[in-house]
Image 1 (cartoon, rainbow, N blue to C red):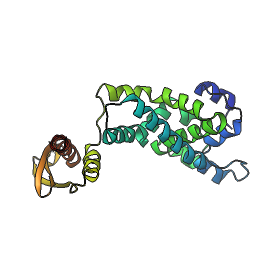
Image 2 (spheres, helix red, strand yellow):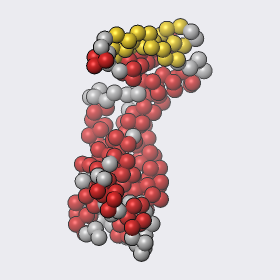
Image 3 (cartoon, rainbow, N blue to C red):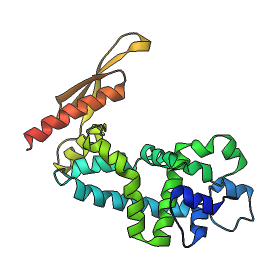
Image 4 (tube, helix red, strand yellow):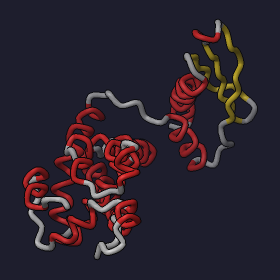
Length: 232
């Protein structure tokens, strides 16, 4: 069983109701192997934690970046709330070390799986919210995402330009972008892809990269700049 006092010290959090913390750490696989465990898994807490996290992130971005429009805010929020970011935060907290999980899940590396780490962090946020309210949950979230916000401010984040272009086209009631692989050159171990993005049957962006995805992203970035300029 988890030493909850040690866990709270490690996480720098003090719970009024420690059962909420224990639930946040309880993976469903643990319940499957321990039928007499009195608490549910962390999935319900994950549900409310996801909502709280999304609200707090949206609130912070709205005040932090007044110069950004809805599209850019949406893209940055997607970066901050994605599984990769959540798992990275959870790893920095060593949250996986405190999980209660079944032997099979544990043996398969469950404490380091991104999905488990991300879910566990959302469950922890949900537990903090229920135990101490939105203000304390906000404070915890802000502390964890500060390094990621700094990456955004320094331009170190690769935004999802495909999603941004799609969102812009929908908002402006334009035809949706269509991607076409125009060329593939090079041997199998060193291919180069050229991708065109089209709107209204016109090529509005061309990108190249070592993968189709990378080429699409470059093409959509150039296309977004073009359509933004034309609709400015």
